[in-house]
Picture 1 (tube, helix red, strand yellow):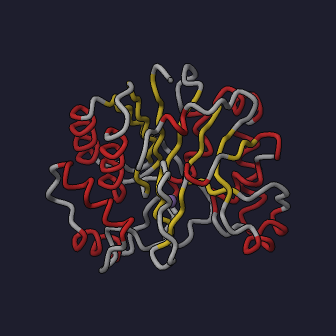
Picture 2 (cartoon, rainbow, N blue to C red):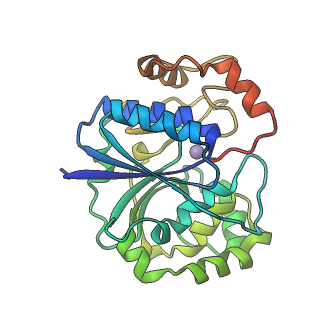
Picture 3 (cartoon, rainbow, N blue to C red):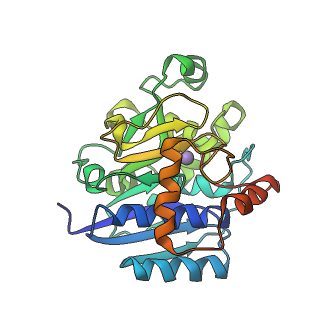
Length: 277
Ligand SMILES: [Mn+2]
């Protein structure tokens, strides 16, 4: 068991409510001291207030850090620059933070966060979950020269000390500049390129159970973290599948009334670029 848990989000206003909901889901299974760090380029005052208010209710310490981050990088589709911030976590987070769990905001806890957090990562930089279909990624991996299992970057348990020893800002930028023309999933590809086999520890798929709205797959019973991958999220689909109904079941407990599926549908249809893939 840990004395305290550090959790990192990198996002913008569009993912405020899913993130708050995720913290509520975390508290259903865990009462340990939690520090939540938010790295953002564009969080509004209003979002900040809202987040702090809910973190107080949940007994979570919130640290919001606004980052000036102008990058000449591929900013494709529904991706935002905020998601790149996770790669620079080692630089922006205080040096007394040694271990942190980065999570996308399009996820929900279905079990105790410590089942992920308590993994011993002293000998690696990042613990993560491999994408379930490596065959489909063969070409992409070949193009990028990735030899290890291609991992999903939605959940990254980071050993920040080991990362600080191995990476620096300049070499990350060099990777980004060099690989930008080849990227499909921008920040995820970069992380896969930067990490070598020995930097990684692969965790069980239940630690990042990726489910697409259109797939027939369902959440496995022992899932710790469900990940709503793809563009269709529980808040912008017309019909909810079983694992998506879970999102709204938890949401009812937040007491938030200003976020509903229809409103969000408008929001995501407005051309706004959001974080999290
Ligand atoms: Mn995601």
